[in-house]
Amino acid sequence: MISLSSAVRLHRPPKSGTAALASKAMLAELDASPKPGLVDHFDTGSHSDMDYALFRRSAGAIAPYFHSMEARARGRPASPELFAELREIGKGAEEAMFAETSGINTHKGQIFLFALLIAAAADTLQTQPYVRPRRDHLSAALRRMTAGIVRRELTDELKRRPVRTNGEKLYVRYGSAGIRGEAEEGFPAIFYTGQPAYAAALADGLSSNDAAVDTLLQLICVCDDSTLLHRVGHEGLRMMQRMSRMVLDAGGMRTPQGRTEVEKMNRRCIELNMSPGGSADLLAGTIFVHGLLCGEYKCD
Picture (cartoon, rainbow, N blue to C red):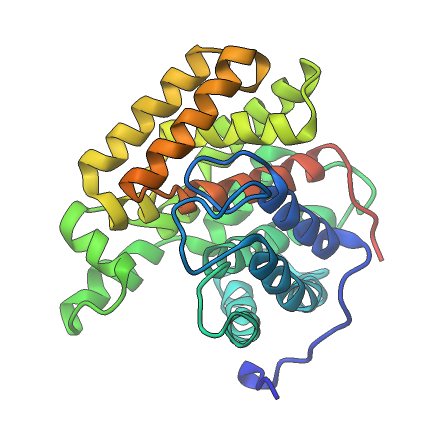
């Protein structure tokens, strides 16, 4: 039996609304193939303890908690207080994830990210539920919820106690604030790199799969990916960014040469234990935001 933090009520798995869109985006990120260094349909990338089936089970265990987040956020303005409540629901989602995966972290970053994005969507949709939200409204709502989070949860917190988590270690060693830093800035990687790249790829006629792979490469180029930093350090991160740019310059998923280069990049990532997990989380968020901007949701 999974205990829910703060007696959070667990809703049915989402069938409509922004919660369903979040689950759809999570699975679209997983399904995108080939993803260099990451678990996908073809292989397990640089991960010996994870596979595609495990990620599918994890996503299924998490999905009902997105519905609970949507229900809690509906009709409420974006605020730090609302985000704190959704993070409590997120703790229950993490417990469900770890129970399903026997303690393996498959989606912790995406739980944090979608708590914010679902709340931002609720804020922008509460007065006009059938009007497509605007990216500036969504980004502003995100910034309101997360103002000062890096100072509170990293800078000030680490003055009071020793470093515990990988994210904290990266902040101390490299000054990288990870997903907290992205969130505090309103996820610029999603709104100004990911979503425009994804929309342009689809407009050029790429399939949703190929658009997602190209978008992942674009995100790697601009993101200080915390998973990469943890695995291969700053130099490894920069190498991954150079490889991503070379693949895109070769045409990415738009050309046969680019597709070949994606496969070569994946083999190189596996050799060097490189995994752009932080960029993958941003890809999931990108697909969610694109759906919002295009009206790909149905209110309950």
